[in-house]
Length: 278
Image 1 (tube, rainbow, N blue to C red):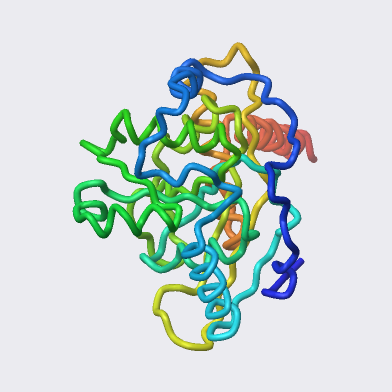
Image 2 (image 1 turned 30 degrees about the vertical axis):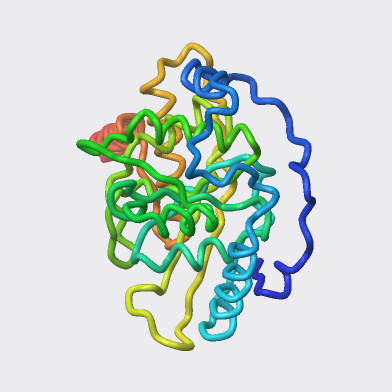
């Protein structure tokens, strides 16, 4: 199923839609939410009341995405009700514009940026949060405690948070190993991951074909007796498989032990039959 700009114009509700309560939310999430109104002052507080700047820029960017480029969106019916996390492949700095344009106007789709570079000026600290960008300060590949708390607090308010679990740019249909943070956040907050695959953005040219594919949501509902690492890995495998399927490739395979066993049985059976033949 494909959709273009015309199918994205329906007005979403002004308040968060009702959604089923998660079966489980972890201690990290509860600790962050228990901080009350302690949301980082640089974070836009209400995902269902985007700032005027966000609304104007969203409209302009979406017009460009669907008129200057031949962009198609597949799988809009797979979007879960918010809150959720978008996990996408990452080809270039501008792919965020195509991903955000594939989703409704509300709630705000939040993205993260470095505190020491994107928020290092007074005018930046005033302007950047109005576009749903919130600050993080990663160290050795890990988010700072303040940035982690922001993710949980925004999800608690019904937001959508966009993450790129590869951590760096990938090329074409190649997909780098996925970092575990996106699955960890989803499990702790009890929210689904919405996998997205973007194709055609290797070189930005007018009227080029771009496809944004939205896969079925990956929900944090593995068996309760699994340990956290196994839960995280299961969700990561689901994200990777969904993106690779959108590219027309197979995702990670399970162990070939059973396949090899069956193949061995048939091989031995054929050998046995051959030995009995006159």
